[in-house]
Length: 141
Image 1 (cartoon, rainbow, N blue to C red):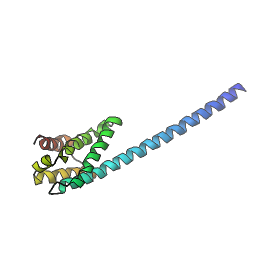
Image 2: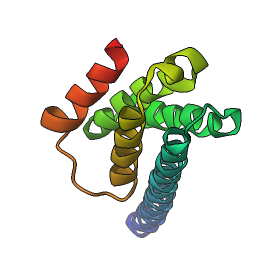
Image 3: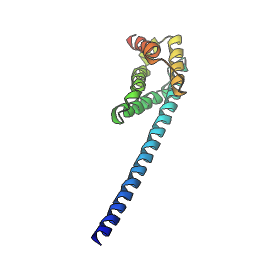
Image 4: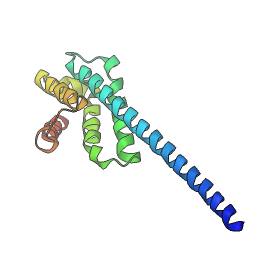
């Protein structure tokens, strides 16, 4: 009788553990998908900031939000594969300063917007050979 009761309790605990694990996994995957969609939306909105000829304050917010999303992914979720996105967001966020934005040429703004759109659409961009040197060139000026 004790063995039967122990088996029933073990079965119930195992079932609860499996259910809890499934719920946690589903919440985490939904959160990650929402985060990824949010980042893609902010990349598109940030591209609009660089497509404008003049500095417009209403387009600054997506740059901060993009940086926030990337920082959450990089620091809290420990998604080291997305450290590239964190680097992009960190450098691009510097241009919310109107003086720095004014220093960019039309070609640099256009190219930055193009890269942001490519990242938003999951198009391939060679980070090490193409994007990082371009971003470093922007941040030096």
